[in-house]
Amino acid sequence: MFIAASLAILITMGLALARALAGPTTYDRIAAVNMFGTKTVLLIAVLAFLSDRNDLLDIALVYALINFIGVVAALKLVTQGDFYSSDRDKREAEKEEPE
Amino acid sequence: MKSYSFAALLFLFWIFLSGHFDPLLLGFGVASVALTVFLSKRMNVIDHKSYPLHLSSKLPGFFVYIFREIIKANVDVITRVLGWRGASISPQLIDIPLLQKTDLGAVIYANAITLTPGTVSIELSKETITIHALTKEAADELLTGSMSNEISNRVFKQ
Amino acid sequence: MIIDILSWICLLAGGVLGIIGGIGIHRFPDFYSRLHAAGITDTLCAMLILLGLGLQAGWSIAAFKLALIFLFLFFTSPTASHALANAALHSGLTPKLDRDSRGAKS
Image (tube, each protein chain N blue to C red):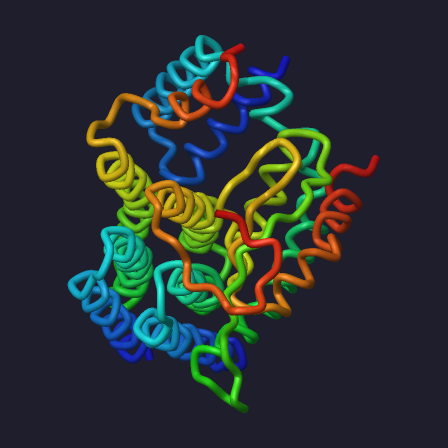
């Protein structure tokens, strides 16, 4: 039964990967990669039960966090070209006086 | 006072994650908890807003409500993905008024909107939230403000 | 026995929902509506699969870790969706809207 669940997750990952390759915009790709990462977390969790090794759950736990940070970092890189400046601050500064 | 309860919670978290009781590993745990609490104090994040311990008794009621909403919204989106009974999509971009008074309330509300499939909060300003909704019905339901009222009642009511 | 059957139902339903979400991100016409389809797989699909695994684990550290994984996904996935949608709107990607939509801005 775990095998069926992991196969279903793998199919979903394939579909997400197809969307990531097809595009058309960068944001589609990032959203697809985000979904792919979420499915990876679930796949690792299922594999932990399939192979009866509970250590894998720790990896899934860490992957859930890394996936989020990775997506946000990729998004920051795409929208502003670097990791450190904040274009939200720039936008707000244009609209109103900074506090 | 808050940092002591924070440290106790973190240590409990460590024990649950490791499941070992060797002196060495417990020592590592104490060291990491001390470092985390020190850094959090330096960053000034242990305050009423970032560490809302006073809301934890309200969590179960809120979770029951949000799970019910998630399941309802999921069923709706799934029928539209599969196109059952001629279900189609009618994407909307609308502004809804933000009735939450506190920042925390606004964040909880926007997160609840995004968590329910079919609606995504796009932009949060002081008075309004810009929403992208998959269907007109989902947009209309948000315009009634029932979710905002539920959050006010379940989370912030004394 | 009953718990086994329940957990199998949860796992299978979760897998099927995942595939439906995967179909959704190919059927919907534009980026913003695809986010909703990805939302299915982030919420109910993850919930059901982790619940199914948790029923198999019983009361143990493994169940606690599964609950924690769920909690992290529960908190991070709306944040990531919001950040994506916000960045897309500000970069000038206009959503395909229904004709009679009201109050649409920009």
